[in-house]
View (cartoon, each protein chain N blue to C red):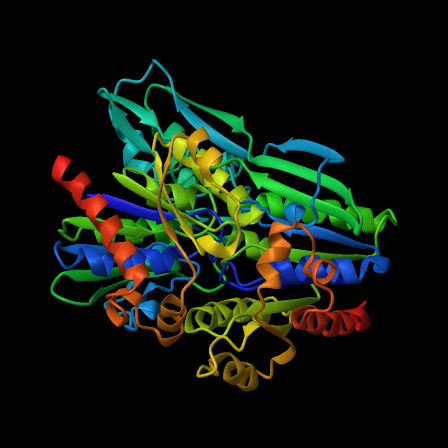
Length: 289
Length: 289
């Protein structure tokens, strides 16, 4: 079963919720935690573990055999990213940073063998075994690479290839298709927010995205005692449900700065009980499916 | 002068600092650019009630499968975005993943795929009490929010050419992908913000790499200074890289309260120690201007 932790705004506590929930669920189930925040993956830091078993994420780029090219220009016309150019009567050439790796140029080229396969490295994936019941798959974007989507997909593919009871995805902030790819097909989506006008605004954006995906959110309000801003009407409007409020606490702060998740360091604390309750709700969903 | 405020990690205080700096430096005719199209927040910090202008940006394309489809599945084989799925035995394109590259159209043997223009999102501008603001919002689930950011920066640069403003301060998105790279394009100086945690350090290292890559002079602000006295990783990194620390903003409850009040921190709590430190940072920025 696939579960996703997301939220729109950055820094609301997605990774804190995802790692603690993964540890709680791993007491009973085989869990693969997937760090799909490929631009800034941090789950391994919160779990104090090193990333292991690196694999490269490659993206196609065209390589021209000019001896076969007729300069017909079809590849240039069909490139949606305008990544192919030519000067006057010259041969087409590639602006590598614009290329999306979609292969359309190769597919439309009428002279077979003119556009050959080359690739660039756009990211990495990792697979770390944390315990008998918990494994971590992480995607990490190559430095300087703009396109995070292919690395999200590669991490998703690698994670879903591992047999488990629960695949728990932790997404990037934001609402683009790199977030949608991590969320789609989830049975449960947890949106982590905070009671500030900024948190509320960005929660609406992620709830809109979930509506497009025909999904309803379980909303977790983190630092819930920060203000008395209510999320009720917003969540109601999009058909979600507020399932937990996590007040600020010394336990969370201490465990965060020390790099030991709160459910491990303070298993009897209030936040740990909240994670247990969320895990119970997930258990109910598992028992229905 | 074109200054970008970035952090890698979300929620460490980019919009709070940007909002306060622009409030303090309002006499310098600064255009504020909110470069987080997936979770735009600066207009909330400035309490913008009305947009001066709002328009759609059409820079995306999207594919659709027509009734001519013979369900051969060739499109699915070439789609690198994994955007094609089967619903009731018919091939369909998930709009929230499609980037409109046209690879499916190139291989379709019966010409059953239509490519059309799609809205990427909206660009908005406003007069605030502090000067001009450009903001953008991605249509949720769409690709390439970086194109929105590029368009925003073009508007800001146009205003400068027309003499409507003199400087640009960009509030970048979380992460290090397309939106952040678009924010960095043409910038002179970068203010990087980090908080004293291992996660934030990891993300700072990644965003600092980008400043070196794009040859933008980086400066560092440590936010929530003092929450983690045992951790000196940020300062060590700064020393190692010769990264000048231009401010250490202490954690204060006035910060979240100012967000709730929708006022820049330096106006909401001008005498707080956090505001005092931001004023020192503003003096540094003032010299740049």
